[in-house]
Image (cartoon, rainbow, N blue to C red):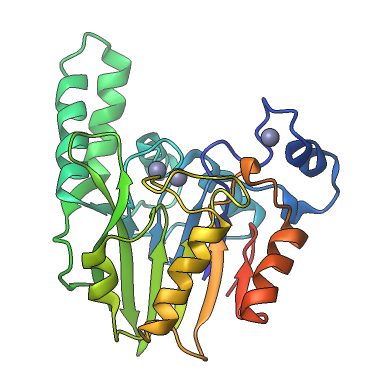
Length: 287
Ligand SMILES: [Zn+2]
Ligand SMILES: [Zn+2]
Ligand SMILES: [Zn+2]
């Protein structure tokens, strides 16, 4: 498994920003401080989220997407999904594989609505390209809190406290069971809904990947994101209800410059609480 990107929406550094965190990341020769928008390669057939940065990250980290079949979309925000990436498989010299985008019913309905409207526009090049993309990719809605067998994985989406672009769209976080191991990818989340927390109770997770978007930045309690403090509260609850145990590994992703935590400081903050069990991820980290 590979982190293709670990930044919040604007990249880290935000190219438009002159805050100390952005300036430090920009000046540094440590590539771990330079974060692309978040996406995650689960296996050669499956990735989670698919943004513009994912394309370049594949080259940088030596990844081929020629066997990609499944993309689990957390939600429709510009940092998590760029549908126009679906134009590129058919430009490959080798034969493309069909790609299924799995998402919530609201995300699928919203995307279908946009695409149905777009193909009626008088822009022939755009309409041609959309038709080509539709010929090799499709959207499938998954039910929340129910397991669906996809290839050799059992996928169970849980609902995140994070609204996407579309009316009534709430993000999905994904529990992926494969080969007796359970991975839970949770960004973007906000503070977990009670139903989601209860659903996770007593379900052991071997590998948790969770957002830590806002670091030291103060957030309102109803924010659709976590900062370092609400992240710790969430982790503590997951440990207390045995979703996480002593053998679990936790990785923090979707990190933004506003948190004003560089990699070292964020890691020290977490080490003081979790003694090395929780690791701040970076682009290119394989787990
Ligand atoms: Zn995001
Ligand atoms: Zn900044
Ligand atoms: Zn989002």
